[in-house]
Structures are given as structure tokens and as C-alpha cells.
Amino acid sequence: PLIALGVIFEDNLLANAGWMVSSVSLVIWTAMILIEKMLSPRIPIELLEED
Image (cartoon, rainbow, N blue to C red):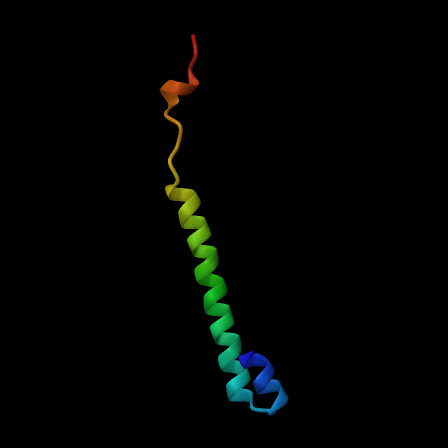
């Protein structure tokens, strides 16, 4: 919404603020997905080895 308002009212500061907020939220979202995958529980190797 902030980007659209900046474009409609031809206010570069408002549009740039919208892009900044969107970019930061996208980076945080991506980082959270990566961190969740890195910290997810793993299957111990002992359970994978079957004799």
C-alpha cells in the first residue's frame, strides 16, 4: 500500500520507504526460513544404520 500511495501521489520518499519496508521484510522472512531449516531436528545417524 505504501508503494502505491507513493506512486499515486508522485512522492518518491514515500515510494522509496515502501520499497525499503518490503525489502527488509522479504530479507527477514527469507532468513527465518533458512534459520528454521538449519535448526530443525535431525535424525540421529544411529537410527539410519540398520544391521
